[in-house]
Image (cartoon, rainbow, N blue to C red; front, top):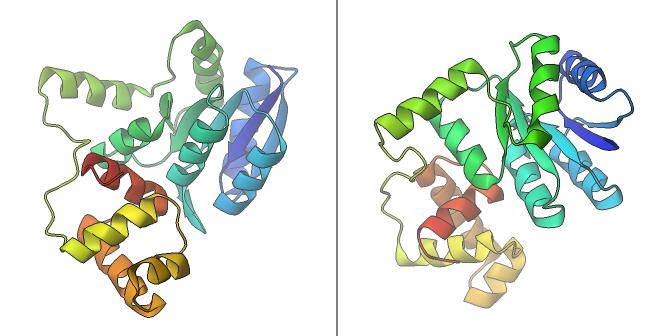
Length: 211
């Protein structure tokens, strides 16, 4: 194990994750980031074999980091380390490319054992998360499908462009409307879909056939 990316905005959480990683892989070099922006910089500068990513970050969602890693470094094993144990966070993270999902209330030595197994095809899963997955496959209810929403034709158009990574000003120019109008459309889209990041928007746009 060479480079490991740790993404969390809480110093104590980063310390726990680093301890678990070094317990599992003593030779690992841990690089820490406490925001989406710093994580993106790290991904652009360093090749990682493993990443542990929190979902709640001060400047966005860890889903953006997962999507970025999946696109730029598909060989990196990505594991969510979060306090969120609900279906929406779990299945959205897995859909974005996460290969494991652990809750931060688990002991560090337990996490270390889970991490050792990831390269043997054993995805790290907290017991509560494993039960959710088992329950889903026993009683499928499609939690990874976005709820039905009433997006206008213009909102669907904006969502499709937004999901492609196009800037607000460029969307405005392409649609021949003001950037303030685009901003209003984006706010309405985020509110209707109950999302807060471009990564989540891309997932919804893909499921709606917009990209």
